[in-house]
Length: 352
Image 1 (tube, rainbow, N blue to C red):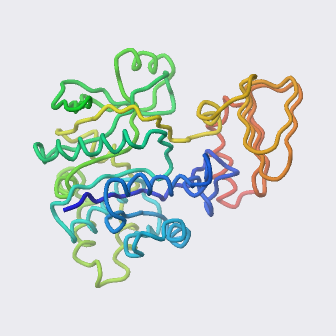
Image 2 (tube, rainbow, N blue to C red; image 1 turned 180 degrees about the vertical axis):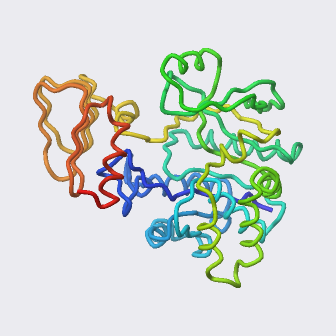
């Protein structure tokens, strides 16, 4: 059967506030050209499998916008989360839906809000992984991005022995996963050949469901109830989410499973994670400024500017983020851009 693709699109993109919001998170925003990040993720996926085999898991509030953005996908393939519970419950939900269709299907999982500049290389890596699963069906495969700098904002994967090599691609056993490191440790990781954890996965659906049963028995109980009730009980998804812990697939499964492998990849990847990262991603002028929209810069260096309707003017200012959003203006040093999510959470919670 054809590959089944799951696109996770439930995030809020809080570090890109005020452009990204709960109503229009970053996956629905175009950062390059006219296509949103979600639309680009879908178009990469249709080079792997037909639209009827592509699923999007998103918040209930965003289902209509997702359907408008991806009209090719059947409405039944847009899976609504009543509340956010991180990636493990999300992936479990999608796996149960796919297993009802084909219990032995191969399942790829992609975030919706990443930028990939060489999508053909992603396609080659996934197809290589699919072939690897034919020989090693019990593997959990992740993609690890070859880093080009000591980045403190990403998790890392430590690879070891090569399991398979073909067509310039390799499959390596994973020795360990590491959390976001301080700068000194990130430099050591870079020298040691560690990979960035991109949150992209490939496995057989029966394998990942077996891992839930072995390693996350509480969540698995909810998955069994969900599988038995889907289609008959309209509140079964709500009960599943309300009873599920908020935990990532990395913590819940990948870091604890024994048969985990990684495909090192280099396809121009970024998670478009914060405003400072935008300055590393997109074209800069002769003074290192990244500008989206209208701006006038005089004696200004290394700034990230995003204007929507108004011209932004900077004179004698360096290393700032200045963003004109729909109802707020953000100004902060680039070095503090990871903290933007604190403000986003504050306004989302209704605090003044």
